[in-house]
Image (tube, rainbow, N blue to C red):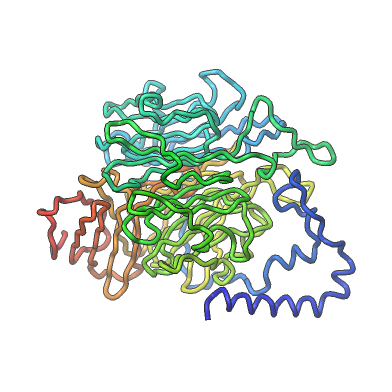
Length: 602
């Protein structure tokens, strides 16, 4: 029996029991559900009766408690000690401008190639200001001793636009990480000059052709020519200087519902290999309508050796552009089961986490959503597509009351089980309707067949209520595990140092030669004894943020040597035998004649 059939049967039986025992006194005491109007919030409490709101929690999705022997990742906010003082200023002054609600991203990069990753923070500010001094982005250099220093303005990456997010990669294959910033208005591409400075090449590169509201973006080699292409998510048509009035029936200003706004088309820029890009036209099949896009990940989701594009859309079906040998694309999200929830409903999709949580060799997707609607876990079945595993794995009920944005999946404590981090925070102040504005983050751990919420055991940060947005994962202290940088609106960004200890691990860092130098699209299979672990260097993911392009594998208490298989985007396959654990494995893509098998790495 398929998971969907099994789930449907249990769900219908549960509904029958609730109706049988509760109908008399419950239904009579509640009015029928009120039809939601476009000006109401996406899932307002006023649009549902108490009975149906309780029913939506799904009685089969019982929370799983943390067991005594379960290992929980440990995180500690060290941003003050590290010298990173950054607050994303949304610029909110009570006008409830849409652009104020969703901004805030950051990215890891090694801008000076000292093997220490630095962090770049995108600033908002006043969305209607034309001042060159407002909302300047910041770059913090890793000092190598646990502290960071803010770099001066002469580095050339401050950008005075109203920032939303960032994506980072070496777009011109010169060995230095470059920065692409998404703004409300013109986006910016900063080329790393290799001397500690950056140059704004937006106009000359052809990546600043429009003045739209962009949210997230991602790099990926879509045609496998060795040059990185760029996918840009655009949200809706919105004029910050003449905004639409979306006040509620009481005259209180509210953030506009996306259903009231016209979607912008997303953009795809193909690299010409000479530092310039060309904007893709309709003929490639990438120009889908009604996106209202917020999140993106570029990954070979069907493992046919060509990278696909998955896009999270707000209140419209998500996109899955399947890549046909780099020549054309087809939106197959509905066909493959990842456009909507398993119940067939559109959702307010924001961020995307990726990882092979069930260890079947295909990357699964976790998509964050609005309040009164859980985040969604799409289990990747390979050729058969995806299925909504949210309820059957225990992830439905714990996220119902949260509004989530940035998210990361990874084995944070190396115990062989995937974890999920989720940043939460509302877009509107709806305390009068029973919603929190600031919200605590969440942490889950996968324990064989169920995800267990373990936030309370992960550290004090998880008890703080914040307006969380972008999340970027990276190993800033080079101790082999993933630390997290979390951007919060109007509160200090957090640097969550990963203090988990006691398990064995392997960190893999890759550099392409024939393939793109950042190695986006490279797949790595690690076999330890009879168990297989799979990961891929993807473009994008999370929300408006850019993680470190490194892969982290956890082995628990098993310290056996591993076999490591690297499948480069060029098609070359490299296999390394007897690789010891507890090390950072740095590999440069070899020429075909240089590939070696059976080499023991010391």
